[in-house]
Length: 77
Image (cartoon, rainbow, N blue to C red; front, side, top):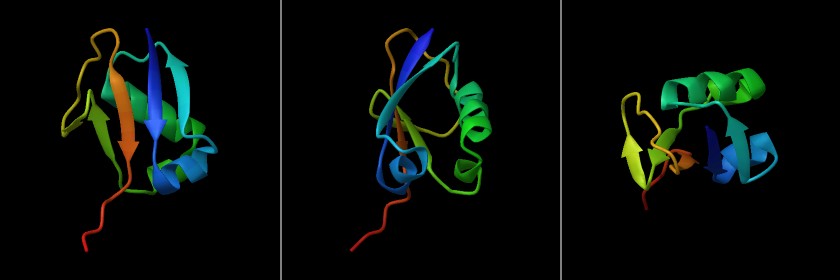
């Protein structure tokens, strides 16, 4: 399965793009492991993963055409 990952803020800066695709990623745990292998600096940061515009807090299996976003911490004001 191919997934499209959108990145925002400093996460996009670290990766060097705001969107990319990955193959054979069935769930968010696998996604996190792959991202940390590819971009070790991401492992040192706190960020949230959203699947289909919902922030998730546990491993989530992708069901086909999932929209995935990596979100940096938000600061209020």
